[in-house]
Image (cartoon, rainbow, N blue to C red):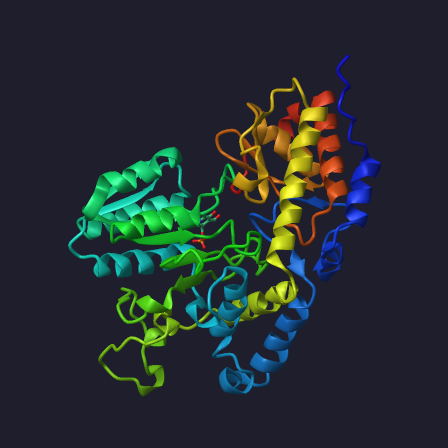
Length: 418
Ligand SMILES: Cc1ncc(COP(=O)(O)O)c(C=O)c1O
């Protein structure tokens, strides 16, 4: 007789939390009592200290210091300071990353800048199903620069790179996919494209702050990433941009503004790009948002990204095992890689009634999100998500299904943000 695998009990998950080496990080967040927050891949939780920093910035530095605070409160170099804190998390040097604008805007700057570095080449390779902002901006820039954008299925990317050959200018990919959580081989793809003389731009929206990205070890050229997801910078937090130091001289980004100038306060009429990563700036930083992000990043100060990664893989594995144990025959399909190494910090399930199920689950305080047409996303931000949350979340989903709670009309009403 085959022995049945032992059922995972709630107590087992509590034991896993007791053995978690980074469990203490949860105390550094303001989390609503009773909620199980599984959407740090969309909007990170509020780190303690951010509110106080913003209060000080508004009341004292802005209210009293006024314009003097750009110098006296050290506002001016905040984009560089926050960039340096992020650099440590993504394997870059402190002076290769700067915080500014959104991913969308930074991607535009990098795409045009990189294509200007490969003027005689005409092909851009990207992915079908990439995040829409990447798709739209890739398409627009390709059109504007007279290039051909080749979007292929993830499994065909390497072949598309090889097929483009010496005409390949650029590869633009999202390292961890926003819907499935699938992880690309950053080192392998970068090297493959570079062997042909091309450049690569990585979107780290779902990697920074949750995956031990090694940009310089992978010899990466360029990257962008998000401040409001795993870095917990707050709604609409500024993004970041990475340029490998070897490209500082040749990079020629198109959004020439005074903050990217070599001497912004010389007020000259001629544009001269700053020789450092500062050249990626355009206009004045969104100062309060930048200070919020800078403060939020303190959570990561002594965190070993490999330990954090180990935990989010284990959370994902546990969640999948519990889904198999508790939700069999209910119509759910796993839409993320089962192998933790190939999966980022989220697990996605598909279900034909996915939208209503997610709304019913959120009403119970288990907060994930929904991506059309049928994907329920559950994100596991290791600094504040617990193993027991996996057990409780799946128990709630099961109740929502067992009782047909999801079928109530209020859960079928589509809201603007899903
Ligand atoms: C992979 C990816 N890229 C880009 C973005 C959007 O970035 P932004 O709002 O900073 O332009 C998102 C947002 O969710 C994303 O998931």
